[in-house]
Amino acid sequence: MESGADVNLSLVEVKKNLYKFLSILRKVGVVMLKTMLEKVLIIGTGMTGASVASLLRHDLSKATAISMWDKSKGIGGRMSTSRCNKDGRCTVDLGAQYISATPNFLQSHANYYTELTEKGVLRELSTNIEGHQDKVAGTKHFVTPDGVSAIVKYYVNKADPVLGKGYLVKDVSIANDKVKVTTDEGHSEHFDAVVITMPVAQILQLQGDIASLIDDKGVRPALQSVSYSARFAVGLFYEPGTKLDIPWSAKYVTDNQCIRYISVDDRKRGKSSSDVGPSICIHTSAPWGLKNIEMDKDKAAVEILKHLQTLLPGLPDPVEVKGHKWRYSQVHKAYPDSPGCVVLSETPAIILAGDAFTHSNFDGCVDSAISVQQTLAKLVKSKV
Image 1 (spheres, one colour):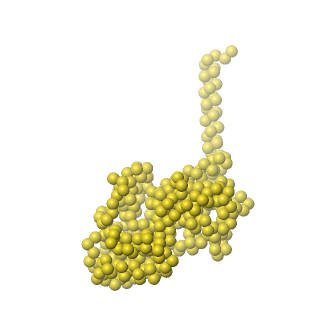
Image 2 (tube, rainbow, N blue to C red):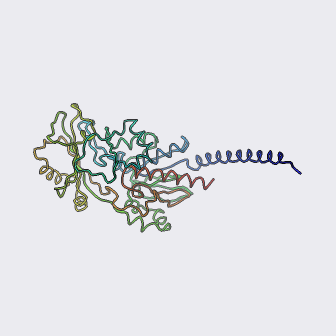
Image 3 (tube, helix red, strand yellow):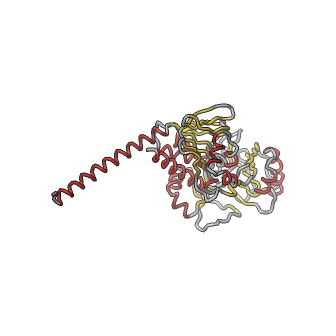
């Protein structure tokens, strides 16, 4: 019979061999991750898409090609910063205006807020937003000195993707165990995984196999239940040295049927300069935006400025006016139970993501991106 010492020695050897085996499995898993995901596409270059790209770049081999496509010529999505054509240093945020972080998200997303503030992308709001009321006590507010799109650009730069601008995706199908994605102009490529972060209403308009996948997964009713608010935005750009006789930096308006919010953008960001002209952003109310959503953005801008004159009479003439239509502004009703993302296909991977699957703000986009990262890792691990 074996002695107790021999048994203990055998157990030690078994454990050593087990650890070696597990180490080999982990290495195989890394290899599989790199080989299974040689080419990844993220549709949409907003906050969710940029966060997903950054997280995946951290997880995947540098040899993995990460592409990002967007129908727009720029990046940012609803975190949009527009530049004056006459002076590109003069900018205005036409989408998100500032970042509000509740105590819970300040803790759970502490690494995001710490990194962005240390890099100078974010700065704590130093001025008062008239009419703003926090829903949660202890909420902190942040602004972006270089415009809100700087957040998205920061994460896109970390991911170093292949950018496809002006790529309006029309068809998402499966061909030879790859995802074939085709634009409206006929450009097609094949990918190992595709993450779609466009508004849900646009996802439901996509052609190809994705339509049957949505039905097969039984998620069409849930997707159709998602709704968005709609609104217009107008940016006003001024010459350097222009004096704006406005006593506040930003204000929520309650006594106008059209205008809901006005911001002197350079003041709001704490970045006024004598060399760069000031700028003003106007957002309409959601009811006015919904009522007039089919109106041309430039015609809407004319109507909005008429209302602005009643609120701020005597404003100087701007050197440029830019109107924008947000057909899908903020998520009004999110996907049921807010799962973070929805998997339509596991092999090859097709994943739906965005704030429609969480909640409509910066932290909602980050939560969705983290959900995509975790989900994709599980899908790959299950194939190892």
